[in-house]
Image 1 (cartoon, rainbow, N blue to C red):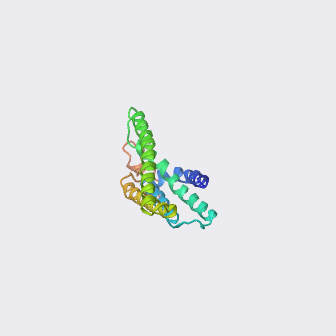
Image 2 (cartoon, one colour; image 1 turned 90 degrees about the horizontal axis):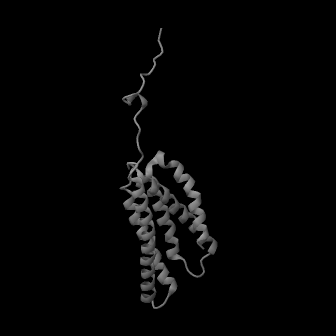
Image 3 (tube, rainbow, N blue to C red; image 1 turned 120 degrees about the horizontal axis):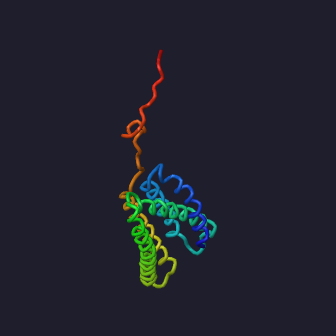
Length: 172
C-alpha cells in the first residue's frame, strides 16, 4: 500500500524542485503540508469495506504533498550559509531526518497502541484515532512552514552598484 505514496512523492519532486527559486521554500512546503494533511484525513474514515483503489489514490496525493516538502526544506537549510558551514548543515539535516522519522513513527505507534486498547481491541477505531493524530501533526507542520524563507527577490540590473548604464536610443 505504500507504493502509491512513493509514486506521488516522485511526481511532486520535479514540480517542487523547479519552482523553489520562483516561489520560495515557504509556499511550496506550506502547500505540500496542506496536501499531505488533507490526504491523510480519508484514512481516518476508512474501514474494512473501503475501496483499496480509492485509498491508493489518496496515497498518491499524500505522497505528492510529502514529496513536495522534502526538497524545499533541504534548500532552506542551506540558504545564507558560508562554504565552511555547508558540511555542518548537511550533517544536522540528515540527523534531523533520521531521528525525526524514527521519533514520529514511535509516537504514532504508541498513539495507535493506546487507541486500540482504549477501543477494546478494535483495530479500525484505533487506526482512525492514529490517522487523526497524523493529520494533526501535519497541520502543525503547516504552521511551522510559515517560518521558512520566501522567494529571494533580486534587484533589477539597473539598481546593482556595478551595473553598466543602460543605453538609451536617441529620440532624434
